Length: 367
View 1 (cartoon, rainbow, N blue to C red):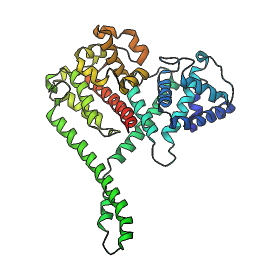
View 2 (view 1 turned 180 degrees about the vertical axis):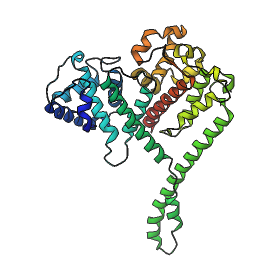
View 3 (view 1 turned 90 degrees about the vertical axis):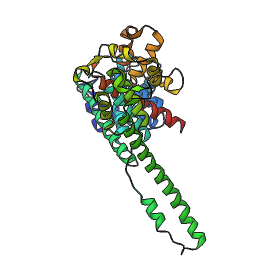
View 4 (view 1 turned 180 degrees about the horizontal axis):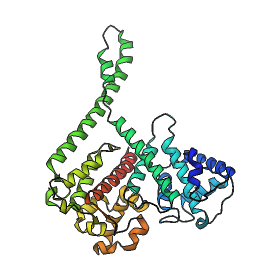
């Protein structure tokens, strides 16, 4: 978002000079290429943009901080101390990631852009809005850009078509055999890829509809109606996220809400604090969203600000004292207080978004 450099810089300097705007835009531009090839750096940037570079787990020696300071100094001056330059680092990181979200060299959002978009939606959906107006505007702008990308890519992923199959049907035996194979083989391969994509779309629809119809939690092995709303919300978020193509349709969160609220009396659907909600989450549920080991566990440790409920699940498992063990540590690590109160369905949609982000991270690594 180089075109918004002035507006983003206002979180650190309400009246930056034209020279400063130009130099900071150049710094942000230089950061875009490294972000395209380094997912851990990209997620560090997103976490710093959301929570600030003085929050957990950043230090003066953190990879993202070192790279930001070096790149900015290549184009001008900047205080070296993180305490003095943290807000400006936040602005430059936001400009660079915003550029990644909105500029697509080949006209199609890259996997890194989708990853950043999923991270913003997972981190900001329940996080209280920033009090400072310029920071709030910056985060809202990035979240809007993220929603636009996810909608575009989700629609493209689910677009139906049979062009390759239609082309295959036009091939005749009139063509000499040597030339025929040059035509047939790539066309057959395209048709197979097309059929596989269509099958995945069908499978998502069928599995999701059957799950909604059965209203049965495979995690808890009970009907959703027999679970407390907070538990039903958690299971719905996990199990619908498991069935979704990546990225999911923006309407998928409405399915979580419907699964949680269907057939329940309105009196049981009042907002509930996180501290109260976790009392209804079983060990099986905690381990499903926040495994003890593996790549998901590593992501939860590295990015608590992007996966706040996953981090809370890990902390609950470790402290052995229940909801009381969350305390101030949760707020410091994730930006969400245990006293935050939301409808149960909102906790479920947050679980859904986090599980989607986890899958995008781990499944892409495996592939």
